[in-house]
Amino acid sequence: MERTAAFARVRDCLVVTLLGETTGRSWESLRSDLLGRLGASGVRGVVIDASAVAVVDDVDGRALADTVDMCRLLGARALVAGLSVEVVTALILLDAPLDRLEGEASVERAIERLLQGADDGQP
Image (tube, rainbow, N blue to C red; front, side, top):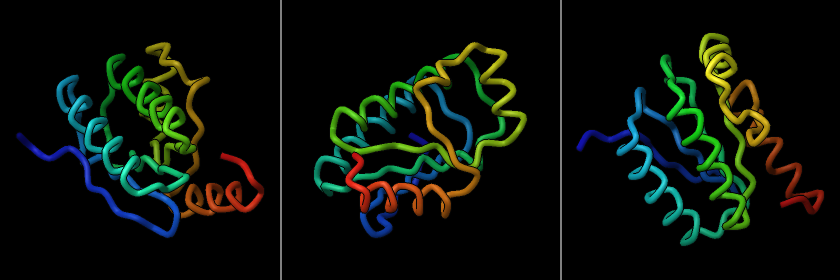
């Protein structure tokens, strides 16, 4: 199976870099891997780096929101970083559940925001 994400730990954050197009099956694999790493690492923040994603469909929008919800249930705050204008526009047109997502323009800003929130006592 083709690899769909790369993982790195940066301080108290887990950075998940999406490596291009995803499918329903690859989202399941990615979530399983992410949740396993999240549970084992004990980090309080997750950054989903979507800067390499050029095309999304309604499955991707729901899967992204579900992934963020799953992180929250395990005690971690998740931010999506690096979405392009085209991808954001597509998610809006596809009526994706954007109210469940928090975003930042870059991975660096997302990490800063998560670490600041941890210092303030936010989950």
